[in-house]
Length: 303
Image 1 (tube, helix red, strand yellow):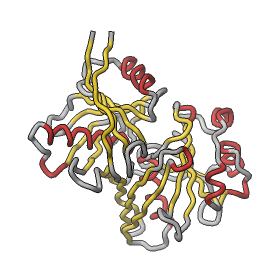
Image 2 (spheres, one colour):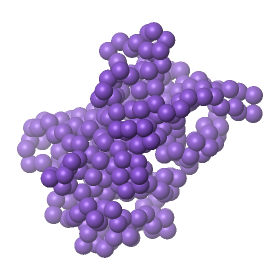
Image 3 (cartoon, rainbow, N blue to C red):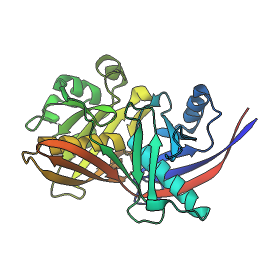
């Protein structure tokens, strides 16, 4: 019998029971992949992370990330939430982190992610990435329409066609014409099998831009084939989105910042702070951050 400690935290939340809940399991070195997948299914959250000893002692931890159905090479909200939990634990033990910096080893080919933040800070941790965005590939508006049940005229195509882009995890991105269209979107699981298998992209990321609103960008993300019918807040998706918006901006040099809301339509309102830096026409760095609020802690038993 094995006893393991865990914490849950609401990530990108402005209040408890908002944002995207995350489970963080400590001391997971002895677990098999099958056991981790089983525990992620048991928690049944968008993601569960498993903290292990790092291969390089200079790094904070090796972190493995699972949805209820699959392991992910990288994800944003698990990095932010795990950084918060480990920073909080370090403070509780009277050994706060130097510079509040954590470097995680992950399964992504560019396997280390730097998460910065403090358990005390009001702004919360941030996940920073050197830009590794994949070349954007166009996707047919008719396919997006089938995926989310919207007519094709709801898809805004003046700035970009629906496309696949990535900052660690690939998503299909489509801008919609208005907030009402975003609210009306609903994932069609059968269409995902036909048009968007997981080996092509992790999910469908829809967004609207309404400069007069706060936040001025609202988003939704569907990934039913990964066991996530809808995600309350998608760090990796929003990192890629801010990079895409910076790429589309005509200025060759800029620092683009945005407040992005997600999860409102599913009753888990989230707020993400995103940033992208662009130099000489190339997006060089992206970042996403937000508040984290602790919810539960306890032990789980494996027999």
